[in-house]
Amino acid sequence: MKKEQCPLCYSEMESIDCTPCHDCGHFENEVKKFNVIGGKFNVYDLYDGLTLQLCDLCKIDFGSYKSDFLGFKDSTTIGFENMNFITEIDKPKMEKDKFCPECKMRMKFLTFISSLREKINE
Ligand SMILES: [Zn+2]
Ligand SMILES: [Zn+2]
Image (cartoon, rainbow, N blue to C red; front, side, top):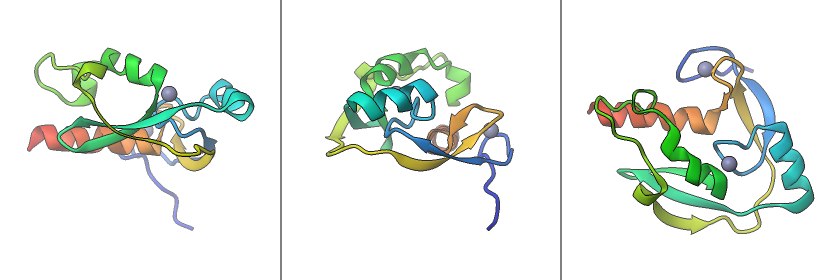
């Protein structure tokens, strides 16, 4: 099977188990917590139709991602007040994803960031 590459840094990705949160789902303590008490995850439209699936904490924290990381040329950030709720995940469960050991982020998140940068550049 072909190895997948990180859309941001082109490192080889590793296969991992994640919670349904596209931002923190790869963290070991989040996985442990999810397996014990579960969690709530919602899908949001963050920017012009680009969606991300987040837990409540990551939704609140998203505003701390820096403008240049997100791809904005000005000081724009995406706070929870800028997100449009789309849907709640019904019966959330663990899922497989790829993980970039360089960026320390999962594929779902990296793909979102890469699409966001592209959209901003349009
Ligand atoms: Zn999260
Ligand atoms: Zn990477």
